[in-house]
Image 1 (cartoon, rainbow, N blue to C red):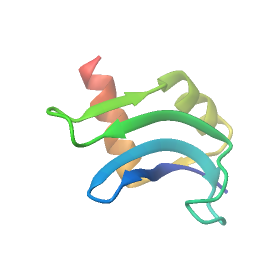
Image 2: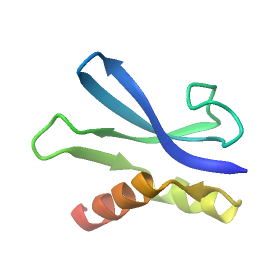
Image 3: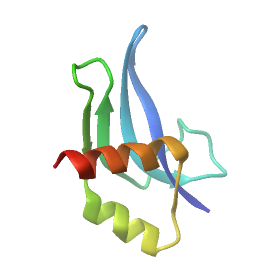
Length: 80
């Protein structure tokens, strides 16, 4: 099953997340099929960039959004 979820990047105490499409049976650090956005919680306000067209494409192919990504997509849609 495909999942759209966050992958933590960045260094210690400086988190940065990529929004990726990957197989749910693999670890979150395994290779992703596609990177469709990013999330930087350290900026004020937190920066959320998500390619909504690619999210819709992958959802139409059967991918499921994680709870956190679902909230981020809503936030990105409301902001712009």
